[in-house]
Length: 294
Ligand code: GLU
Image (cartoon, rainbow, N blue to C red; front, side):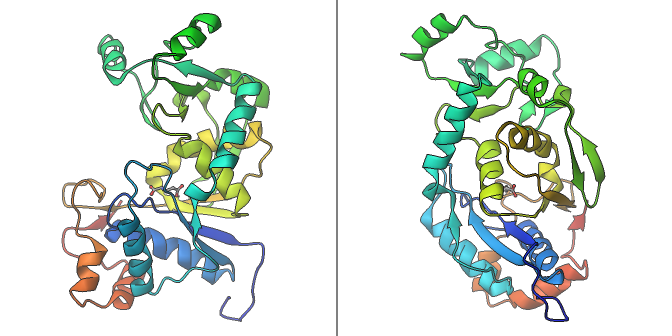
């Protein structure tokens, strides 16, 4: 509710962590921004656990996320949502994209892609170096035959997709209106070799399904939003408003990350620190020594 106590049913915001590690200060900041965005406007704040990567997701990390958010005083509305409850909807969307002929099989391995990239330096897309398109025009019958024995992913043919959708744009409340530029995306993976669905498709479907009006998340996902906008257009889904917030950086200017072992919230919580006070400081842009905002 707003300070005047009014509920605004049109505002729905989510925090969507992946339970593949312990949350750190950057997550506390992200959760605070999304939570406050919803509450200041009288909207709802949802928690969605993005556990599609079953190889890396762990129940103990889910437990830690819930405990961390409660400790921070960032409480969500309704039941916790789990992506792992939604495999059927992801599979249905994959089938729909295939029947629209928007996806193709890709047999490239990391090593073969690195080799191709050594010839030139491809621009960076949302998922790293832009894919060279090696498998885009493989003979279909041959691809089907190879698929019987070779692991493969499915990629979105972005040029074909945009030829179908026409020009697209989206609005970011912080960065302004954005025009989708297919040249900066490349053919992103929609179904990875070892997972039923990739982040881009799952998050796009879920934001629609959960009625998210405003996607509030970090600038690290800014480049991905063009992909999500294309998928929304292909699958007749609504386009939320976006708000990509700045990131917390360490002394070397790198964003805090699970893999860099940034101090976890659980450690602070269990050492008896005051989570509510921590969030109050983040709200005032007061950060621990060496940490700054991008
Ligand atoms: N699950 C993603 C992450 O933990 C965030 C997804 C999103 O906010 O769109 O990085």
